[in-house]
Length: 243
Ligand code: ADP
Image (cartoon, rainbow, N blue to C red):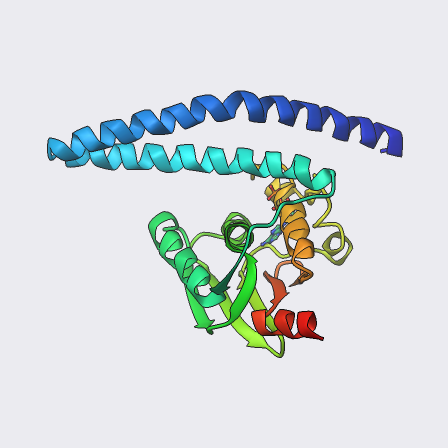
């Protein structure tokens, strides 16, 4: 495709995404409120069946909200500023939260969290959490049911390094560099039926760059992939600030 055609295509997608994001977010927020009201009522009536169904409905609404938040973040990333709300926290704790979330939401794969080492970082906790969730969700999307996904969190010199390894379809060499580009999706028969917009990894890259970190992937076609990111530890940031 020639470059102007691609640009026009991107602009059309952007316009569409802005409208959809704004128009959908308000009703979804109300919907999640109504579901929660019903949940309270179901709990009061000891109606376990309704509680269960409403819980699942709420999970789906939350998924939609996080997809829309992704689109809205993309608009911000484009103008060059992802606002960071930094705090000091233990990366291991955040990874353990992902473990609890994975246990509740992923039944198709065996997700193993080890090793998970304590590493204090100074970062935007929610945004780093989004990157971890994105890596895990992609691992689920692009690997066969029943396979294992390994999540690890280690300290390497002055960095916290988080990795997500899958036993999936893998990525060809020529696609590796482009994965983090906006709207980039690998064009392969076996993934034409897997839905996505190609903005997840683009946003992950923006978030990690905003933390002065690194994001990368190691993969071979048919042999699974490992996605990594690293961000500086809190003590290394403090040392840098003092010097
Ligand atoms: P999406 O999954 O919505 O298409 P992403 O930005 O998250 O968008 O990923 C971009 C592309 O990178 C995907 O379309 C897919 O082709 C490839 N990809 C991402 N994660 C993996 C993975 N774990 N294994 C194989 N391919 C992957």
